[in-house]
Image 1: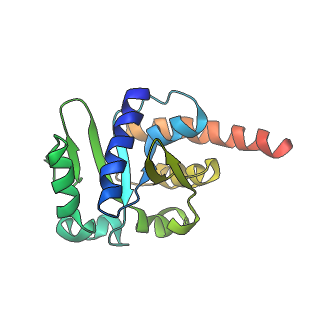
Image 2: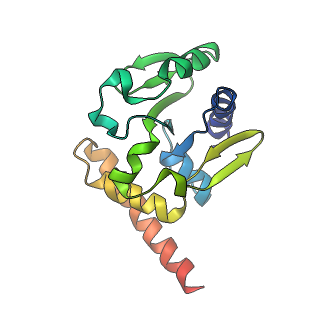
Length: 169
């Protein structure tokens, strides 16, 4: 996780330089908050965009996409998939999503996600409860592959057990 998380921090710092405070999503974010290895394959970053999320056209889904693309290009990344807003530098792959769509998707307002500052990078990181809502919604998303749905189920089970244990304390 350390290398991938450090890369997220590097990208977050670049985004911060252009006035964007990203949300760390996906397995990497869950690894950071839980301390467990969830075998993150990529870095999932959500930034402001069209609240329709995937229903919005590719070219307007992510606010300031051209500014973001310019920053990450300077950092050695190139676009792999325009529809997915997926970029890579050969070592790491980043997929950008829309933080504004979390309310409709998982019932989470962007303003409710906790703010973090680590090693000079500012970002938002969902709580365990918010991750449970996100993965529960993802498990019902027809877009997710069978493999991702199975991994989501493992995370949901872990989060339910962990949160149940936290509530007993």
